[in-house]
Image (tube, rainbow, N blue to C red; front, side, top):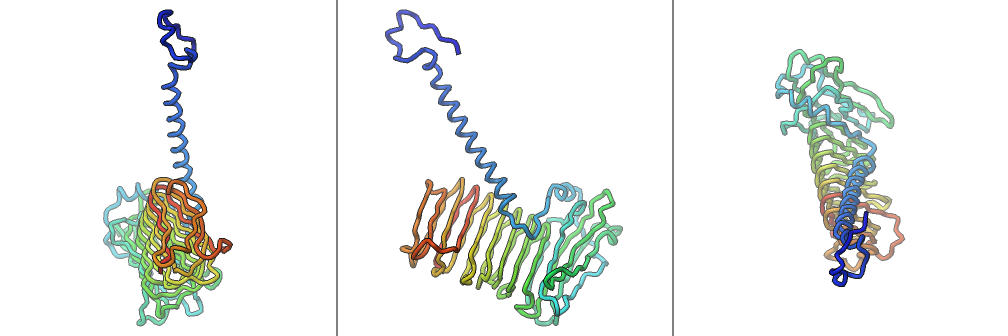
Length: 354
């Protein structure tokens, strides 16, 4: 920048600095603020990308909703009952079930608030029974949708919702699924991946090996279950989970939605719990005897670790203006049990009170 000439009479009134620096002080401060703002925005963007692509469970699949949004805009409310085979019984030799709508290109499951996947215990059925209640918008669409059975590994039966992708107009459907278990512990493994539906699991059910639930544009509600390794994911919806006993690692993710988890009992070999969302709060309540390391992280929000009965067991190793906290709960910090709670926009509360 060229030097600025000053009147001779005013030289004695000028500050003791070079003329090319003083007029720029305001601009320099403004540029500094701009850089800080850009850095903060960049961090926010990277956090969103990181949470969305790294922290979501690898299974079940999280689906792309861009094509569904267009299809839904031109889809009227389906009301014609589907005429295909809709009731399936799982052979007693199978202890696992996978229900999935993995291919949604050109199909929309309308989001009128009535779509549900319910998992219940029903003593009137003699085997695990899955009922698909499907309605289509056009009688000509009856043959465009079907359910495919497939035997998977580890004694798991797969039921996959399929449809014809050759037509140019969207296939509109309403979909409700009822999964009935004759006993509370009829399934060791349950996986559900669905679009535009809430998922609810009745209380006191037992899934000793694995419980995986994923939905696009829907809530996940799990009531007082016992489960092994568990993964829940929703792109737009809350996740509310209560465990009588958690017997495996836990991984819960959302893009837009609050996470609230209550675990009454944790098995000794559980080593990892991860809860992450982009926009929403995170609340995790654990037994007061679960010694563990923790790391809490938020960009816009507060973090808190608390215990009403044993606050002396909480040890904070590091904290950054309330946005990040790390430390351990218990008598020492060498435990291999680790908790990771994160959000971009929202508060985080970790409580050892159950």
